Amino acid sequence: MRHAAFFVLLCLLASPPARSAPETTQVFLDNGELNYVGGVDADANRRLFALYDSLAAKPTVLSIRSRGGPVTAGVPLGRWVRERGLDIKVMEYCLSSCANYVFPAARRKVVSNFAVIGYHGGPGSGQVEFDADTRKMVDAMPPAQRKAFMDDLDKTIKTRVDEERAYLRWLGVREDLSTLGQQDRFQQRHLAEPNVLGWTYSLAGFAKLGVRDISVINPPWKPGSAMQKARFALIEPD
View (cartoon, rainbow, N blue to C red):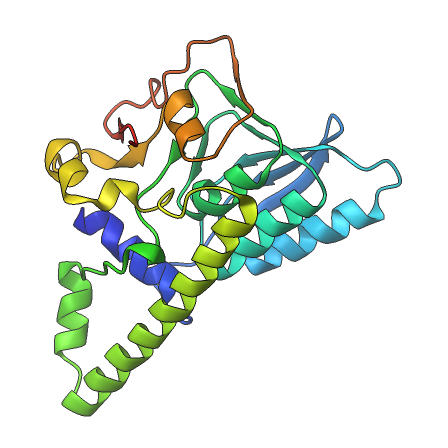
């Protein structure tokens, strides 16, 4: 899963190399629900928190569609959701840090019958594999710069691992929620195909991991059934 590994690296680094100008995440109120559409980032979090604080009648639902973002934005958003007892609604997708930290934080979760709660790994796995472009960039560094880069990366990983584990324990969910699919048995069986972007769980699988109170609109739940060219593998935890 080299394509996923680069996303993990980007989420770990404090100042990732710029690839393109990111789209601004949309935060707004609609039909009495908070909406968060776009990447999880600190600026969008601040705007969401300010919007909530400005409302006399406090919303109880956060509807989110996100491909995720850095741990340093995902954990604070999830903690905020939990502390306010919000429900979460996912009609399309909640991926990466959205799935790792925000979705399990809600007391109650509502998903459409094709919504994807998608995982591709987290810092807790300790696995970082450079894609070809990143490896080329690292190899081109002078030795001293390369060593400093790797030392900084190691320190960042350790910090993020500790932060993630403490946060998941605080939520009361299993610490391997965001990393289970990175185990060899799942990588070889489900995730070797190039069109597989990551993995997800069934209702029963989520429950085993401590993520409960998920309601499906018009069940059964078939995550990703509306996706055309890519998919998320369904894996089952022990």
